[in-house]
Amino acid sequence: MRWLRRLWPRTLFGQLLLIMVSGTLVVQLMSSSIWFDVRFAQVLEAPIRLMAARSAPLIAQAGCHAQGIQAPAHYRVRCADAVPATGVDERRGRRRAELLLQQALEYELGHAQQVRLLHVQLTDQQGHPIVWRSLFGLRTAQAHIQFAVALPDGHWLSIDGQELQGWSGESAWVLISDYLLRVYALRIVAVLVVCLIAVRLCLRPLRRLADAARGLGSNLEQPALALDGPEEVRQAAQAFNAMQQRLIAMVNDKAYFLAAVSHDLRTPLTRMRLRLERLPDDEQRERLRQNITQMDDMIGQVLDYLRTGEQQNLQLVDLDRLVARLCADLASTAEPLPVHGQGGSLRADALLLQRCLQNLVVNALRYAKQVSLSLQATAGGVYIHIDDRGPGIAPGLLNTVTDPFVRGEGSRNQGSGGYGLGLSIAQRIASSHGGELLLHNREGGGLRVSVFLPTASREA
Image (cartoon, rainbow, N blue to C red; front, side):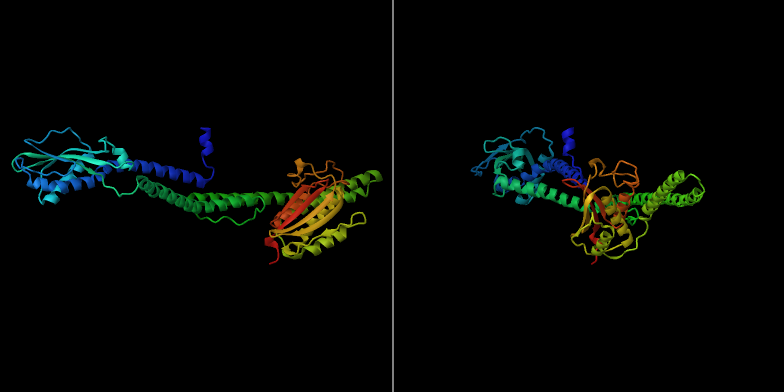
């Protein structure tokens, strides 16, 4: 069973093609059994008609006392007082052959004639029956036919003769190849074309559904799926659209709740600052002031993270100028922040894009050294690379470090790290522009953080 599972195609097109081709072959074999039932008489048609034409003169002149009847080669003629006895043969092919012989003799003689088919068989040159082989053309067959005709004087004229099976004169293998090509090969090709058309028509809405499902992770607000295609696909698209709306509602509720709580927390924090001024102990007052500042900063980052998902204010942005201005503001004597390459212009939210790059550059300056930036324009979009020489990120954290509140640096010291939202905000901004945030550890130590913005955002 395992090897059968391995042979079973994984794609819908492969499965449908296998089912259709196998079904076509089975149906063809079943229809061949019906074809064989009538083929026996069809193979004998030419020999019977030829034998009727050659026997008609013998019957017309024959009387059992007539002398000098000249029978053709491979024919034997004799008279009998009664119809010769025959075995019971109820095969449908034999009945058809007898009916064909009656019709052929009636045509040759010009009147109906009582005929009794005594024996009919296809044989080879040695007289061995080769019915199946003759049907498939592997040998040249001979028709051995014996029949009796009632004469006016009451006797029966028995004619026993042999005629070659009707044939085209071509090689048997040529005819078999032609038969297999027309009946099987062309039919399988036709089934393949039908399957290809059917699968393309049926899979088109399924592919749209799969693309929409893949894009849902990066763009929850993407347009709803069109309700077209087969009924099952329309139901799936309708269920997907309903699921998307529920997800949007859940995310919005969560974001509104978190934003409301974060915003409302600033009111008691303000009151706490005012009350701190009345404390007599300067040391305790300073500690509490630091705690309140940290809480306020955390709330500010949470609000920034939530605001990055809001509607963008797209405008034409000169990337080279934006990056150069950002590096000039953050550069120092120890870290001059050199910039290489050119990215050109694209449509983006300048404020969000600047916040994204600022978070990444500040993050690199905080943990590493020798920070540099480079812009790379490609056919698919623009890459903004931020390279550094620092500790990098553990390989096990590369896929999760961009999640909210996940940090690559282990300590919770505000002086050495933030709250785990900087990379999350950067990724959210890149995704909102249809791009992505990529992180790779560099050879020799350090990290490369790349912001990719797709070509669709670039200036035409």
